View 1 (cartoon, helix red, strand yellow):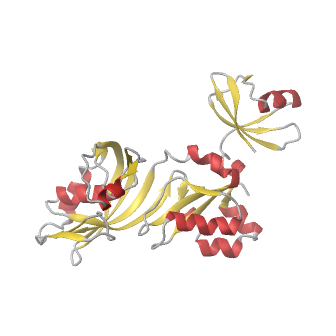
View 2 (view 1 turned 180 degrees about the vertical axis):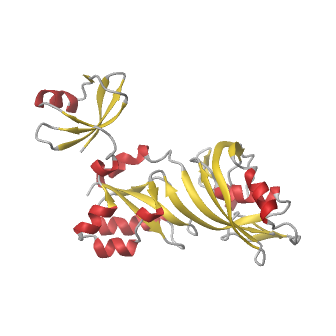
View 3 (view 1 turned 180 degrees about the horizontal axis):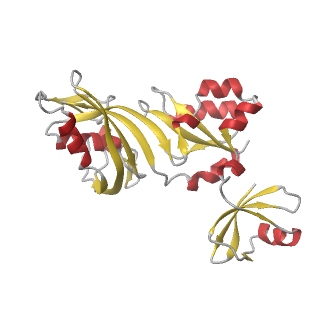
Length: 291
């Protein structure tokens, strides 16, 4: 099978663990377009077989998360996996709806963010967390991100926890965002829980568990509903039906003159067989993905 399956990643396993399990289920090559930390849950699109060719259409997608921020405690990894390195008492008037909403609103829009030292970003060919584990300090440069929306979901004053939902651009580190929010509140904090509820067009409602997939891999109705073939992924894109002559030229990599808007198009032969995806730029159609 070639396409995408969206997994609802459970807590306590790595994205690599999920890829390994799904690879055994499909007995196909499997890839993903962005990891979730072991303690995080939620939407993890996996590319199956030739579906790996779809990776470039997924890597720049925006994301939506539900987050629990624990304040008054700082960890070395900025999440619940790390060691506690500092604690502070919380003033009773700090966790009010008005105060927290006001602070959260300051983070909406374009901004620069310094990534957490415990991350997989590479500097000089070495991942940041490798520097951190060796006790090496780096002068990290901020990166441009954008927070499209951020809203308070719940305050737990007893546990000093703030639950919020955030829609953000690719490259946003929620652990860094949590620390920055805590700092703006006048305290310290770390990301206690993270649930990714949307990646691009894929919602948490579209996701299935590994157990559901394993039980239904031969269930046609289940797979038709939950597996994204190339045609399903590009379902909203227009189609082009080609003559045998044009199709041969197209498949040989020759750009064809067309009077069409710039976009991606589903390509069919004259017997209505799906061939793949073509891209039109400046009235020229070129081969993009061939199945």
